[in-house]
Each structure stands twice: as C-alpha cells, then as structure tokens.
Amino acid sequence: MDPHPLQTLIDRMDITDTSLRYATGIDLKDRALYRSCFTEEIEMDLSSMGLGPPVTVPADVWVEQALTLVSGFQSTQHIITNHVIIVEGDEATCVAYVQARHFNPGSMITVGGYYTNRLVRSPEGWKICKLKLTQTWSQNT
Image (tube, rainbow, N blue to C red; front, side, top):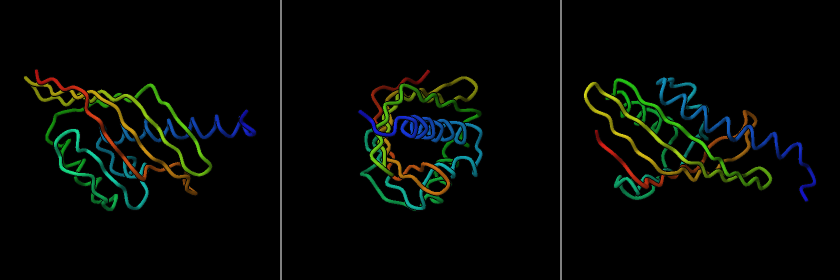
C-alpha cells in the first residue's frame, strides 16, 4: 500500500499536466509553454520514426527544432491520453498514447503511437528528461 496516497495522486496529476502542456505548447507554437516541460538537457529517442539514434541535446535546441518542424504546417494537433504513470520518489515514468495530426490544406499526416517519458521533480514541477516516441502507425491523406 502507498504510504502517501495523496502525494502520489498530486504527482500523477502534475505529470499528466506536463504531458498536456507539451501537446498544447507544440500545437500553439508557444515556445515558453513547450520549453517549460523539459529539464535543461534531454535525451531524445525518435528512432522509430527513422530520425537516427537517441541523442542528448540542450532543451533549447530541441524546442527550436520542434517548433521549426511544426511551423511547416498550417496547424497541428497532438492528442496525448491513457497515461500510465509510475512515481519513484523524485523520478517517474509516464507511458501515454499519442495521435499527432499535421495539417496543410489538401493534405494531412497523422502519426500514432506512444510516448515513454522519464521525468524528474524540480522546484518548478515535473520535467521531462528523457522523451521516447514509439511510432506504431502513420497515414498520409
């Protein structure tokens, strides 16, 4: 039995909120909101999308790369759900489904899969230190 059930619920909600801020920040192209989700340095694993091996980068570099990527679309919508969260003190793992739509007039690219993120507790709240996207399907229309 969890000796601190209320704190565990608060942590789980805060971690879910980090995931939702991630989606909202990228979709609104809100640099500050998106950046608020990450530690100073993050390990990125987008290898399932054919984007090379995992790399560790400064978060500011990743934020610029991600915002540059989505700026090529009129709009995007990242839906992140079904959060499974394991809290281990000041570290946590969150696995969550994602469906990301990337829209331009006349075309849409949709990617489905799941994130496996590692987070750490900081004075500002939970932050992603390792982000792994596992793409399980995609569709171009």
